[in-house]
Amino acid sequence: MNTIPNRRAICETLMEKAGQDKTIVVLCSDSRGSASLEPFAQAYPQQFVEVGIAEQDLVSIAAGMASCGLKPFAASPACFLSTRSLEQIKVDVAYSQNNVKLIGISGGISYGPLGMTHHSTQDIACIASIPGMRVYLPSDRHQTKCLMEALVADDSPAYLRVGRNPVEDVYTSGQCNFVMDKATVLQQGKDITIIACGEMVREAQKAGEILKQKGISARVLDMYCVKPIDRQAVLDAARETGSILTVEEHSAFGGMGSIVSQIVSTCCPVPVVNMALPDQPAIAGTSRQVFDYYGLNASGIAENAERMIKSSGKIYPEH
Amino acid sequence: MNDTELSRKAFLLREQAAGLIYRGKSGHIGSDFSVMDILVTLFYLHLNVSPAQQTDPSRDRFILSKGHTAEALYCILCDKGFFPKEELETFCQFGSKYTGHPNKNINGVEINSGSLGHGLPVGVGMALAGRMQGQPYRVYVVMGDGELAEGSVWEGAMAASHFKLDNLIVIIDRNRLQISGTTESVMNPGDLRSRFESFGWQVWECPGNRIDALDQTISEAKASVGAPALVIANTIKGYGYSAAENQAKWHHKVPSEEEYQQILEELKERRAMIE
Image 1: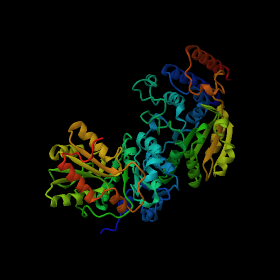
Image 2: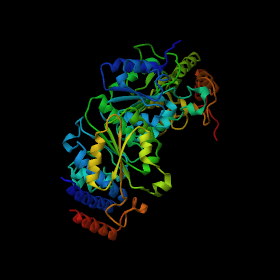
Image 3: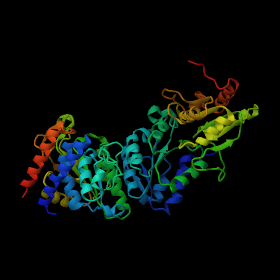
Image 4: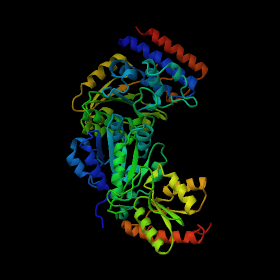
C-alpha cells in the first residue's frame, strides 16, 4: 500500500521546479506542515512566504505577487481556502486574471473526525462557478505530479484539491496516460460509465473490476479535470454506454456530477445518477469509515451501477 | 505643474467626473470629490507611471482600494493619455469596459477593485514581489475610511508590518462619512493613528484636499524605513460642491440636470479663485 500522500507529490514537483524558476513562490497560512511543504520552506526560504492564519490575506497577497510577475502557489486547508477566501478568489485571482494556483489540502472529508468546520464538500461548486477558475481533483500521487507539472507551466489560475491521507495508487509512475484537461480512461466498457474524481477514482476503478467479474462491462473515467470538464468524454460515454454513474467526495449540489448531468441532459439525455455526500454535516470518522457509511466505496458503486443497468437507469424511487 | 496648477486641475477633473456620472447615470460623486486631490497628488507628482510604462516591471503600482471612486481615477488616467476621451464617454453604458469600479481591461488599472478591504493585502503581495525581485518600485494604496471595518484590512496591516514593507504607502481618504452616516456612528474606526502605530506602521496626517500638504506629507512617508507608511488624509466628502459637502446622501447620488449645472458653476468658480 502506498504511504505517500498526494500533497507530498505537490511539494516534490515544486522543489524540482523552484531551483530553475525563481518566479515560483509558495505561500502558506500556518499550513506548511499539513501541506507537506516544510521541505520547500527549508530548501527555498527566499521563495516561501508565511502569512499566518489569515486565508483571505493569503489569497490577496498571492494575487498581488502574481500581478507583479511571480508564480504563486498558495496552500491552505481546502475548507478554509475555498470558502473563507472565496471573495478573494473571485475578485483578486479570477476577475483580476492573476496566475495564482490554489492548493486545497486535506480536502473533502479528510479531516473526518474534526467536524464540518474542517470539511470542504462544497469547494467544487463554489470555485467552479467563478468565471476563469479551473478546478482539479487528482486521484493519486502519480497523476498529481503530472498535473502539477502542467500547472507550473501554464499561466492562468486554478484550484487543485487533494486529500490528507495516502491513497492507493491508481497509476504507476510514468504510466498515467495524462493529457491536460482530458479524462483518463481506466477501463473501457459498453454497458455503463462510471465517472469519478479525486479519491473516489480508486473506488470506481475497483468497482469496475467487481462488475467485470459479474459480466458487466463498465467504462471507468478519471475526471480529475472537473472544470474545464472533458465534455467529449462525457458525451461519448452517454452515447456509447447509455447511462452514467458519477461519484465524488462532495455535495450533490454543484459538484462534478451536476456538471456531467447538465452536459448529458442538454446534449444526449440518458440516465445519470450522482453519488455524493448527503445534504447534512458528514458523520465523524476516518475517510474510510465515512465513505463506507455513505456507500461511497467500490461495493456501493458497483451495486448502484448494477441496479442502473437492471432498471434502465432508475435506481431511486420517484418522488 | 506646480501645486496651484494642480489644485486647479483637480477642480477641472471634478467637473469631468461629474459629467461622467451625470451622463452615465451612475457613480459615487461624494467620494470622487473627496479623493480627487489625493489622486491628483499621486498621479502628477509621485507615481512613476505612464502609458509608455504599462509593462515596465519597475513602474510604481497604484491600487484604488475604494474602487467606487472609479470616475475620479478614470478622468485622471484619461488626462494622462492612458485612453481617449471618446472611449471613456461609454462609462457605465451597455457593453462598456469602463464599469463603475475599475478593472484591468482598462489601461492603467493594476487590479480589479470594488469589493472593499482587498487593496491593502493585494498591495502587500505587490510590495513583497518587488522586494523579492529587486525592483525599486513603490506600491500606493488608497483606501476609504468606511472600508476600515473590513477585517481583511487588518490582516493586511498586520502582514505589512510583519514583512517591514517600507515600499508600501497607504493613504486613507478620511472623509468621515459612509453611505449610512458618519463613520463614527456606523462603525467607529477609533483613533486611526494609534491603531496603525500599534500595528507597527509609521503614520502621518494632513489636510486631504490640499495638494501642497499632501505632496509634502507623501514625500515624508516615502522616506519611511523598515515599516509601512500610512497617510491619514483628512478630507471633505463632496469637496467642491457646497450642497454635497459632508452630506452622506451624496455618496452615490446622480445629480439632476439643475444640480449638474450648479456643480459645474461652483467648480468653475472655485477653480478661478485659486491663485
